[in-house]
Image 1 (cartoon, rainbow, N blue to C red):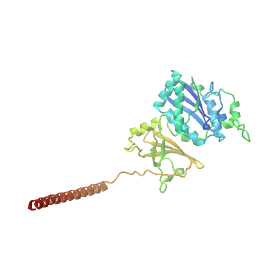
Image 2: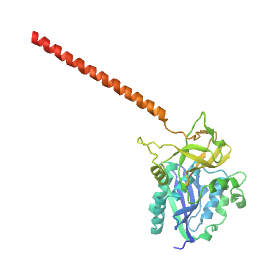
Image 3: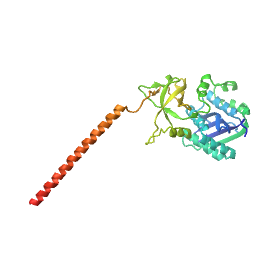
Image 4: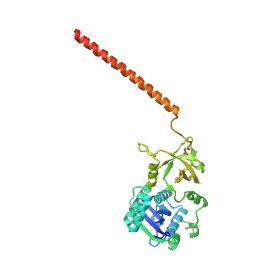
Length: 334
């Protein structure tokens, strides 16, 4: 397969019972087995994502996603969570191997199953109706627009002031938005994580800056992160995950919200979204285990306790022998 060809991979997910609707578009490189670009949006109104996927391109879907986000009509938390989940899955060798195999075999039902497994991590145990469309195309055609402007213009028809023009809706992201995502190398290992909080002595998220070192905990929610947890031997005997130090790579604050990119080691990266950027994160100060002196003191105390226990046992045995002797004498005399 020519390296200059990619898959346009699109799907709509509709769950009427929970009123959750998802539109996704991605560019899949079959050679590197990665999702190179993606856009996704979750909404509570299925009419917002009405588009005929057959014959549509990634750019068509991305324009709709961006317009919904521009108008603030998305379910923000779910959209952000789904974006992170699919980005992580798109870098997972296991997930991508299955996806490309099913695409090549045109096994749409198994593709729907893969999508549902990812969605359930954000949406809960839903059983959506999923429509999938994928096609192989030349890489330079991936950004072409093939559908008319009408579906995009109808998205905001219910608004009082009408929708913004196509030029407004397809405006390029701000430099800050580009920076936060471009700070993660394309071939980096992406993991899911959460901050270790310290309400008293921690650093507010909105005051973090590149180079700061903090403590995070990896979340075992996807194959890539699980692999890192196993490789770093972070899982304890009771099943909990030990915190690890991480370095702040980039941050972005928007009002009360924030996005933060961290790096663990040389090539492990993660991005997290927080609704409240005033939460305090525990800084990493190079904490180590108990000092040598402390360990010696504990060993000495243990030795003392062991000695005392041994002495007590000896006394009890001696008293027992004396008691047995007295009983024997008493029986012999009487």
